[in-house]
Amino acid sequence: MTTNTPHWHADTPTLDLLECLFDYAGSYFRLRNFAQATRRGYLSDQLLFVRYLKGTRGVSRVTEVERAHIIEYLSQAERSGLRGRTRARKLAALRSFFGYLEEAGRIPASPVRGIPRPKQEATEPRVLTEAEYGRLRTAAADDPRSRAIVELFLQTGIRLSEAATLTRNDVGLPESQGLPAIGSLHVRGKGRKERTVTLNSRACEALSAYLGTRADAERGAVLFASRNGPGLTPRGIQRIIDKLMRSAGIAGATVHTLRHTFATHMVRKGTNLRVVQEALGHSSLQTTSRYVALARELMDQQLEAYAL
Image (cartoon, rainbow, N blue to C red; front, side, top):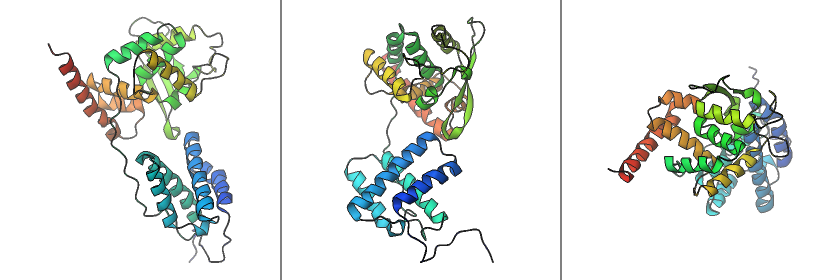
């Protein structure tokens, strides 16, 4: 009986780890259609592991890698203070690489198989209070671009990576800014999934005012441009938000905090959970349902703080 599944044999050439990694990056990434951020993250973690093996264990060939090497590598990462989420990401990168090697018949079995996923810390997402996001708006009020960025995050809950890839073509603004002024936003999300998010009147007004300051606001242009022309990178947008947070006296918050803030306050105000799920681009309603507990906690805090 014949099969298309590759077999490993003892006389199979044992290729260099780094050489195999380049093969993996060149072929497997395209085959799996990984997003660019995933490719960069995986390759970075895989290169660190290859260097670790060569530098501390003298291992340079794929057939020499053992389960114990991976366990020790992850243990060392834990001792150095890396969080469970980070170690879980490293393990996922190694599982993908050695899974490819096994499928290609270069190793008899993946040494990652059976290694449990590191336990992740249960961290409570940071959510801005109404007073805090009010101060954030005030900090951004004098700059149309900053105001548009803040309102887009607060009114849609999109991710930083999604905001950085937006073009003028992705924004559908109403012809009139009278109420209700409802627009739309085409978002390219994780895993190359696309969705359309509603732009409410506040977001439409802020985006319209910002685009009115742009001399190059033609349809194909990037939505958020830097001062010298090219589009803002995720890091550039993050710097703007960080500066506004400091100016508003908001501590312990990031760009992603605005996503949590959008979701939590939408749930608190009674928005249907399915609507919030679609806006956020969650594939599972269970992921979105975490905001129910956050909204309840926020409500408890506010009712206590502002008791009559």
